[in-house]
Image (cartoon, rainbow, N blue to C red; front, top):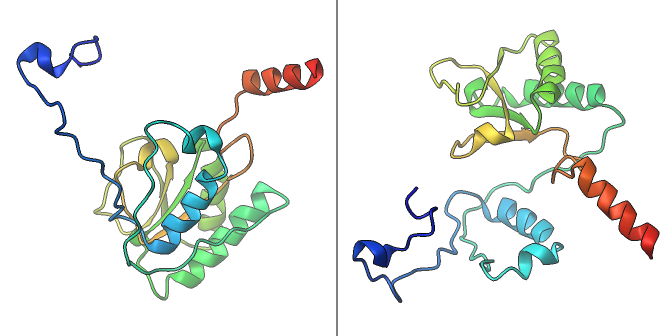
Length: 180
């Protein structure tokens, strides 16, 4: 926290000039997931043109490509997730599966569908993650950082939700269009 106040390492006697390393290798995800993620980022010039953007180096860690699906309602999406998880339980343990969403409310519909399909699940609050119970976990995106699961479902992946676009951002965009 002392660096946040505008202090530098030299203020405590450390000269770190030229001693930095750029970490560009991603050891945590498969090549397919990384390619999919970076293809989305590549479309955002604000990110790619940032001075701190690092071109990724992909490792040869193989897996499946993410599956994108469109749904007409949150209920249809939750039903699909419950059916898919039901089938995946022949290959994976319930504790290896997680469903994530931006908002806690979005996970409640999934929880309801999982329970209707007789699938054990737990809707967890922030940092309430427990690994001793063997059930499907439901967590918000804000709580998932640093955790790894073999199977991940992301629900509610819609424009203006992920990435989040506030009402103010939308108002500013409309104002800009109107001015043109």
